[in-house]
Length: 189
Image 1 (cartoon, rainbow, N blue to C red):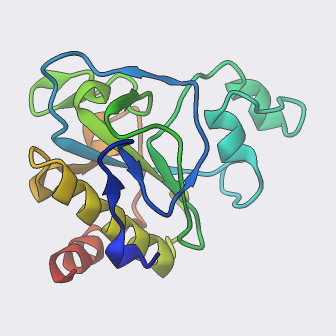
Image 2 (image 1 turned 135 degrees about the horizontal axis):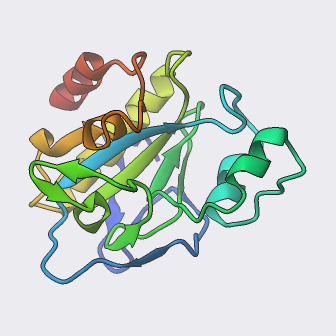
């Protein structure tokens, strides 16, 4: 399915056409928390390297700490994101959008804490030192359009980076994520 025509199944709150790999790292959103924030993240495992099964393994609690020295330092994490957009633009969804994924950690947005309660987290396979791929921007625009169409409480002004909701603690999606380019693509879509 082309990124521009992505849709969310209202029965499952899952992205049609995305690969589904269920993460155990989620729970119900607290009552009264409308989805009004989209958080863009970046992840690479090991750091600054792409490819391999490591992101899936992290989000499904199956990461082998012996596979890389860095993995020993994160083996106890229980984290997830709603989706990850890989370098080729392919999308894997781990948590249904109506559920609370564990992506933001200690966070604050517009005076509210606990951003996981009211946000959707989208990971991009990337890092602070390398630019993102055109296919990733296209897929992110497609997912964002589908989310905006499905959740009326989410507006274009409610899109932020992990660094915006956890300043000083997080840097992603990093200095090479082109926010103006992404917003132009989103507006044109």
